[in-house]
Amino acid sequence: MIVCACNVLSCRQIKGTVASDGSGPRTAGEAYDCLGCSPDCGRCAREVRAILAEARAACATQCGSCASREIECAVHVSVGRMLDGIATPVDVSQAA
Image (tube, rainbow, N blue to C red; front, side, top):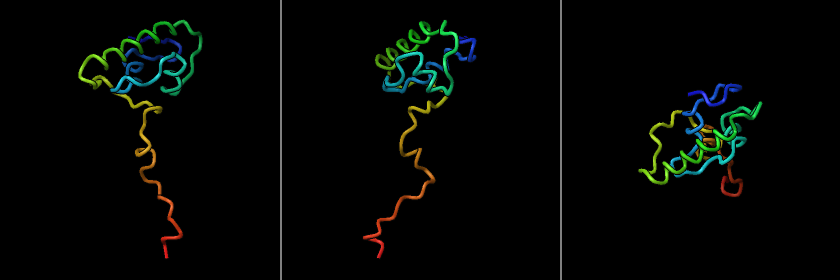
């Protein structure tokens, strides 16, 4: 179901911003940042907050994983994944 007509965001996309441990955005603005867009008219903000709260509650009370998670939120990308492919700095004192 489309929740935000301005950005064409679905309920599933918004739920996908919540990590399996229940962490993640708590406000509509944080969810929009996570999804790479920004709120426009703001009419959906209340619904977005409700979806986020529901998703966090489900993660906390169920098995701890979100099977419906289809997207990866930029906020939740681990540092290890961000550093994949980047050369690590060489310690000059140990290089010789």
